[in-house]
Length: 426
Image (cartoon, rainbow, N blue to C red; front, side, top):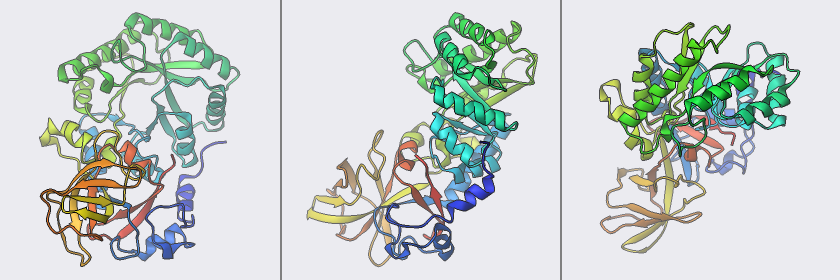
């Protein structure tokens, strides 16, 4: 089955019924459609939403999309942002509308989601050896001549298993040899000699086609600018060596791909120096966390900290919670915990208190010290005036584990007006 009409698939999201499945939405909206609720333009704070509720800033989201569009264009990079960050087809569509070549994904289920919403170009940052998944991919490729799919290979055994599962396919599966970021890194081929062996194995198949090289510099041990740059130069040298050896055959372009969200400045710099090859090079960047950015991990690690003249991303998420217990002057409890807030890298960071009368103030002296399943433990040693019933806005760290806790996320303007609901598929 080929991919769906993207416009029809996205429009169908508006027909989904609001009900108990979706956290934080107004109880009195149950039974209406998502599209009808969006058309009401309710206010997040006065429109019947219940806490905790995650909000995505419309203005900051648009800022981030526009910034990375201009950044990649300025540096001559094709862009396939990692969709596993959001798993939100509405955001995939906006990324493509902002110039993305396609979408990167991590596992076959995510590819199925993207295809259901009409994504035509997909880079899978993983090797696929599951025969059922490979069979589905083969059928997708055979049914849709416009579908472009690329995935990693990182072993001769993996190549052999893929070839067996794909025998008889009309179209070969495009693959890139994944160069590991180090001897103790995650996946990938450890040495250049082993990369050559994997490339030879691909050439011996009838079902696979070698189209380039790729990897993930975020796994470089002890990553720093010098180490990351050195690994990226290994990657581009591998592409040049493969090309000189005639490994890319009759391709129209050679794919060289890298780029997480912490080192895309190094990727841009090294990829700019790729020497002329026998065919044009698709310099494919895959950073994904930029779409919402955050108030922790990527705030601290974004490459824009090193190149501020290129711009700055903005944290687009706030988790609005409520004080439900104030047992002592030094302690409070909020009604959001591990089921609602990302916590794998940093604890949430309070930034705003909103009182019952709608006035707001900075969350000075308020610190989240730990999370239970459904509560945030808060120290209020130096806080004044925090009361049961107050709303507290939390900044969060790590976009990938923010999105996956919420199935339907209100997108709000600066005054709290909800303009859209973002559906996720995890």
